Image (cartoon, rainbow, N blue to C red; front, side, top):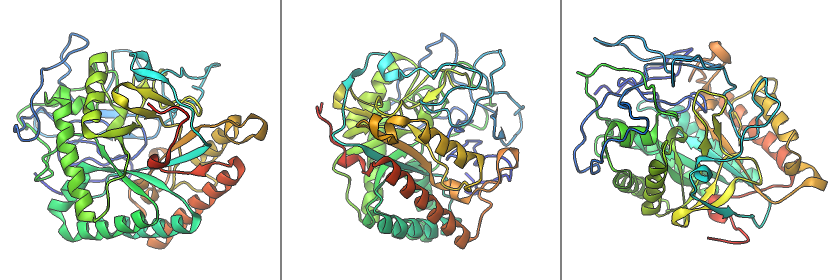
Length: 446
């Protein structure tokens, strides 16, 4: 497998397998890998599922959104494909499709029930003991032989967060960790040094995963003889659960055992301790589409020793029903298997200028949520904000967005300082306390 990852100035990056990995946008993750066989040392194969009584073993070739148009690398036998859930055209949605947002042209807020609740796995709301701000970072898309800007930015982030008294919960993509360790030993050691700085500054690292990979080589299975075809029947963004169970026919609990091994190896290499209470976020917010899927997903997390799940979603991807997370004050509840759901509430673009639409939208969303900041209406809750570290390196917006175009370390540092300064303003306005997952406490624990 080739090691080089390719980036387009106006499109998300694709690796040589045709797979979109990492968050060029917070809601732009899907797979175009072909079916491939894995050895039993990775995970035990499971029965193929088809909740729609159709063949789900197909791949996405092209995806368009309000921000970007994506194309996979075409090989012999490949044809351009449109990613749709059915033959009907889909409305264009804002890329921050989070719980509290009002769909364009709609007079009602999005529904608030996550799939966990809809399928009957919720066991009652949990009331936090304080008003908390859980700042989570998805740390992904770092490339072998191009990790220097990441390490410089991570060290500056660590120093700035130490000075500001911030505590970040970082979900690190294990597939990227393993690939970096195998293909770029020097870059891996540089990244580990920066990770230790972040840990000493108060951050904690948690497992994150988008796809099946070989824990020894970091490579993903592929079958070049099989042509790509669009995913047409999967209700979610085809990502973690789809790749593990539907594409590669593995038992999800067995795959979680592989993830634990990779995560523990990473912690050992970095010389940092495993958090007392483990959290997990599914890549692509994909925890399956049926009740059986979700049950297996939760069972796998329980086998990993996870306490907090943080990828609740609902609706059909690509439609107005699609939503990530739950509103502030309604996003924490008990789940089966003694798990706790701490669903995201919002997304903040750490690389957006103050005058940008992304930044203005974030501030507007916070101001319209009176229970977060208005003293007479304030209530206890956990504001879970999703941040993507790779956004520090992107420039432009919309179709002119240039991915990983910013190479100036000084400019990246200015973006970090500016973003954390605005976090400080919001903290003073809201009175929220920066916490990590392991510091969350509720009036009634499971």
